[in-house]
Amino acid sequence: MEKKVKFSWDEPKTVKLLEAYDNGKGASVETLAQEFGTTTKSVVGKLVYEKVYVKQEKTKKKIEKDEGPTKGQILEALAKKIDTDGAEGASKPFLKEVAKALEVKLPI
Image (cartoon, rainbow, N blue to C red; front, side):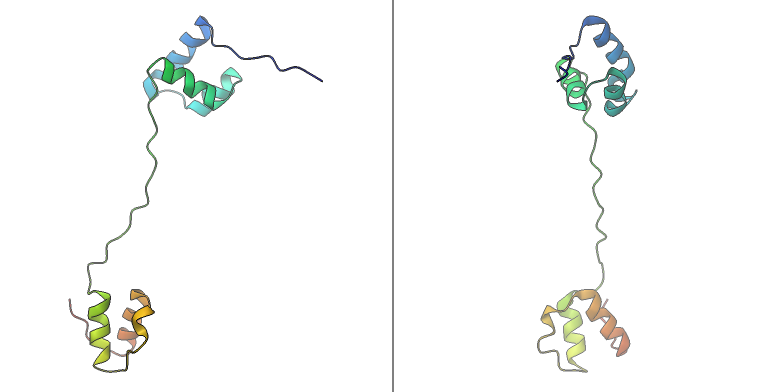
């Protein structure tokens, strides 16, 4: 069974890492891990220790806000034309489509 050689951050490796990382503007953590033959966790740990690590922003999904009528308003408008008992569980987009199909004018 082959023994793995433990990776250690000596002075020359640390200097090279800091130059390549350039306070988050240089190479990515993944690229540096491959270059140094170690894990991304090791690279991040060393950068944190050296107080230069810049955490990457996570991309958030932007939810579009519906500015139209509320679900209750749509149901009220539909109730003038059809029986809406039990329709409370329907989704707002579905109710909008029903109103469009029935040519019900929705409040703005």
